[in-house]
Length: 347
Image 1: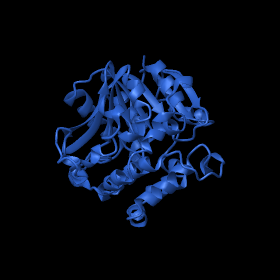
Image 2 (image 1 turned 120 degrees about the vertical axis):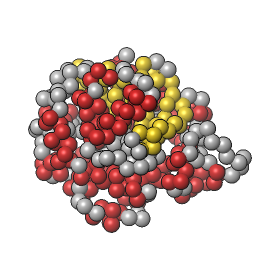
Image 3 (image 1 turned 90 degrees about the horizontal axis):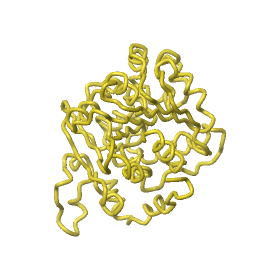
């Protein structure tokens, strides 16, 4: 596809879904996470609908191509969304998001690839407690799911934010099972940036790294916290020199993320992604440099800074691009550009 042909109706169509479904999605709790896509519900009773399917069940583009699946991996029940045909692409989200962060671009990727959008262990609708939230450990869970449970030994692994660090560790630990690496908008903790320096990059990194403090402060205000956070690192937000408080996320997207992060274990798990930064630095330093073809994508104006943190660990960067008119939320802020770049790279 090309930028000019991008279907602008996709994001606006989400807003047309009923407020009743959004309210139910936000209210449902972890009990539904153990359900599978084969479960049926009593017609007309939204309370019987598995929570993980609510945000997608009325979307014909989803139901015609994709399905929700679960697999047990070392005591964690991992949720992922699968669809499409062709060479496999594994998508890994960051904080504070889930598999749903990729939805804007998944249908177009699925025209050429089999897409697996994964909820990281302990986050989204993946339940249970992983052995750790350091990115090397999370990569091993993802690899067990992808390579052993699903039998995919030629994955093209793409990660955004802290999911990019998981994708890097996947490629570093399992190069024989990784065809290509997509690394989207994250300074890599490691040789060129230790934990203390990393925590100084932003108030939220330092805040989330504290023990128990963020849980106590955020507590029952998860949706409010997320709604206030998303604009700050957007292209027009304060982190990029702007003053706009307009979010690049729809209300529906915020509701969906708030639904999952309102689980106390998921809220804490999200913060553990930051608390493990010192371990991530050690693991990155110890990792074998990745020789797999890699695409590096960054927010507008941020490419050089991010590249300086990854060059020693990724030795075959075949494409490195700033995403125009995008802050940290590359997919939400410029989905057509990201899609075009990924399709060219993955093919």
